[in-house]
Amino acid sequence: MTSIFEIYLIAINLVTFLVYGIDKLKAKRGKWRIPESVLLTLAVVGGSIGALLGMLAFRHKTKHKKFTIVVPLILAVQVALLIAIMAK
Image (cartoon, rainbow, N blue to C red; front, top):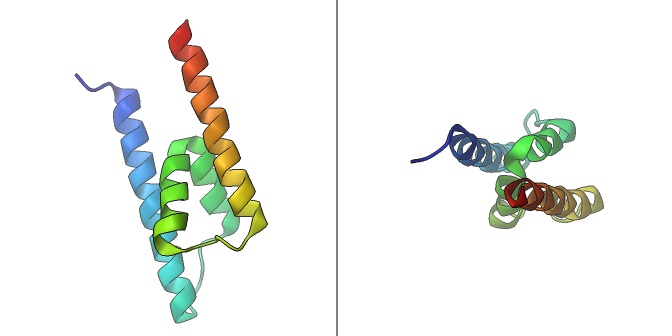
């Protein structure tokens, strides 16, 4: 049976992936953009896999050091925390 936590992780990563895609589309069309703080916050609250996949799939924010360093770092911290929690 799937836990609420697993459903949350799937949902937040899907939303994050889609938001990165929407922001890339808006960037191409010269429209109002989603703030970088929102993109990074989505990664922090559990969407780091979706953020990383969105960056790669849409080639979005891949030239920004802030994103190429911070998003993988967030993912690494989240994986480490998950491993630590599961080990208890």
